[in-house]
Structure formats: C-alpha cells, structure tokens
Image (cartoon, rainbow, N blue to C red; front, top):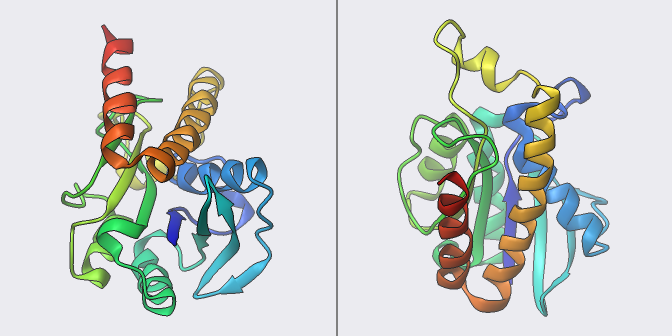
Length: 194
C-alpha cells in the first residue's frame, strides 16, 4: 500500500497558488483513477483506491502547510506503512524552474516549511518526494507572499502540463519503481531545458 500526499493549504483562497501544486496533483490523480476524495480523517481529506494495481490512499492535509507533518505522521502510523518505500510526498519547490519535476528518495527540506514539518514528524529524510518547480521568487518579493501568490497565465499553462507529468510520474513509481521514474522524469526535464 502507498500513501500519496500532496502538500498545500486548505480554504478556497489558496486554490491555484504556487504552494498548492501538491493538492493539484492529488486532484488529478483522484480524477484520473476515479478515487473519491470523500473521507476526512487523519487531519486530511483522503481517498482510497487503486493505481497501477497498488492500493493507495491519496491525502491533502488540512493542517495548513507549516503543520503538514501532523497529518502525514497520523497517516503513516494508522496504515502502518514503511515511509521509505511506501510514502510519496508531492510539493512545490522554488529552487526549480516553473514546470520542472524532480523525483528524489531522500533529502533535506530545502527551506520548505511543509517538508520541515514532515521530516521532523517522521524523524527521517528517507522517503520519495516529487518536487514541482514553481520558479524562483523575484528579489523584491517576500517568500511567503510569492508562494501564496497565483501563477501568471503563461506560468499556469506550464504548470498544468507539469501537473499532468507529475501524475504520470507517480503512476510510473507505482508500476515500475522510483528509479525508473527518476530516470524518465528527471532526465526528461533536464533535456527540455537545453
């Protein structure tokens, strides 16, 4: 069984912001795989279903970003999964260009408060993450204002494509393993830059 968590903030005012691309990926995964997001448990909106023959729980923590770990820890403990191999976290990353995807099996929070909370709660950095590039903040911007801001029309088009690719990457992780997905999606985005 896998738990796939998209990080974001609840409430409609945060919908479609840079910080909520994790939620967006979960929405598309749920829609594509006909998984109803109809449970409110573990401080999250959740759905249970199957993807690529694997049982999954999709989750969108409702704790607000900076406390995401509270929800993730409850999910991991309740379903008794091994976070290193059965947890996938999808989240925004200002260190990557808009639309670029990076899959990793470990690493620091890199200044991302939601990831700090998850790493602190689980007491490990070893779990699969799908980082979604949202672009570097302009120099004059406050980081919080930037990540809570909305994409431009052009950025939105790029991100909509990236969200589809991220859902395909999650499918590949479940079907072929994380290494295959890293080879496919990490390399592909690097080539797109050239």
